[in-house]
Length: 436
Ligand code: HEM
Image (cartoon, rainbow, N blue to C red; front, side):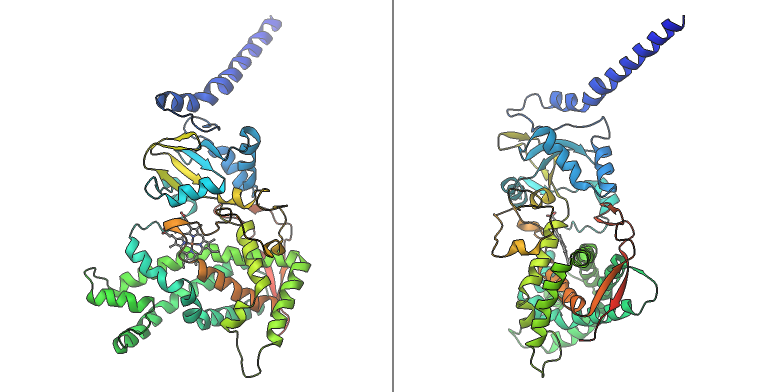
């Protein structure tokens, strides 16, 4: 009798195993294969995961434990380096692209691929994501924070915030969460927005025709003359939302750079030597950092590039507006397309020894088109990219010269949710070294 029970249990277990692994596990794949049976091209390799949840479980498993690259690396291992894969994430059937040519195509072909962040992603991971479709307003807001304008308009203001923030942090007796402090420093910029608005309004009234405009001048011009009517409040909202767009990314980028420098004495030494050279060459009449000096910070700009490569956001999201064929594979209309930026930035064919943080790799190195996209590309190219680089450079200048970071938990585990960071938010002490 006992023997019979044993076989019954074993048979039930086997049936469950077969049902779960061979039927339930493939249900999503069969469903989409059947639904798209009339397609002319095959779907890319990959798997659609479990019914309802798709591949969310492995995604959260790897991302919450800070091993986010394992998610995509497992896909490479299972399906080879085709550079295009099907999956199911955040409740949507999706395609992942990982090669420079395909990533570039998806990001620059705005007719075929529109902005497509899944609702669940925005709710959980990026509540401040700016998804506005108001192209004109965005272009207007973006103009003054791009290129040469950044250095002309914001140098003094950024310098003051950085100097005061570092002083404040080094005066704190207890360890601080460095990441959160960086984020607070960014928020200080918001508080001065109203002040700048008031000041600019006065200036705008007295401006000569043809005189250079900054952001607020332009917005006030529209407000006063244009068909689109804005209130002060609308203008502040637009500005603050732009500033929010950069808070976490700049704060995290500064934190990572300083952590890398702290953990790599050779990089820190090189960065520090460059800054000391700059200080030595400074005329005695000049008291503060100048734009000319910033342009000469060759190694520091490589440090910034290396952090942007090594710690970039994992993906941007698009949605196919029509059925489309890429490299012989079918992307159905309505599917999400994940442009997996970090896979490109960690691809050995573009970056030798990609797991190594090595700013010197940028010596005379021009990445192949589309293989370095920390700020995206195309119409959605990050409007804050110049400001971000600028803020990072100024912060690093003052930091490497005058301060050092003492990590409380150097081996602290990482998470990638909502974005990549140590779980203790980089608990550390900021130690002041000198006053130069
Ligand atoms: C290290 C810092 C930063 C990184 C790595 C970064 C990265 C990115 C990336 C990859 C995109 C493209 C998203 C896409 O294609 O879907 C983007 C868009 C955007 N970024 Fe940044 N960003 C940074 C800083 C900033 C700053 C400082 C601002 C604002 C001043 C900003 C404002 C925006 C806005 C408004 C968009 C949306 C553009 C659009 O939809 O047309 N970002 N950013």
